[in-house]
Length: 226
Image (cartoon, rainbow, N blue to C red; front, side, top):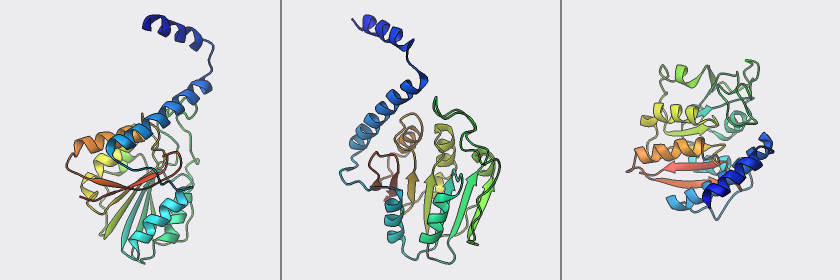
């Protein structure tokens, strides 16, 4: 019976567009992220409207502490501008990592290699605390030394599993209790969700709380509590 069903699916697939497959895969992603959150014991019953609320909630908890904000996947700098306004301590630092050449590999059947390229142009921000590190994460992170700080906010908008895993592995020692880890495309079971799931499995003694999540569990924030 299963073989018949699978054969039927392959015959249907011959007439389905790549965009249709993308939509089906998205539906599976939403099912999986909901299942995963529940399996991990994270309560997602209270969700916010958008990322602005997530950022604001974290900023309210940080207060005037000296924060190191690290963003991976800067693109045109929209999130960086928001955090520049939210972080109140004059000695907080905001470091953005991006090649500004787009994705290094295909992400979905819709978003291929090179998507999100700015043609090499970096965002222009007037905040003197902002600094950009141009290049692929695997090249820039080995030589990066985080400056002194009281709290860490790690913002992962890398989209890809490989890129997200590279960052988590490289900054493992920096993610201490009190650190916030944000994701921008968490509801992708093959990429950001997969990378964080593997990271948690590699650190079974670590505990995280869900700080906030948007309606579709794409933009989520965790804090390491122990």
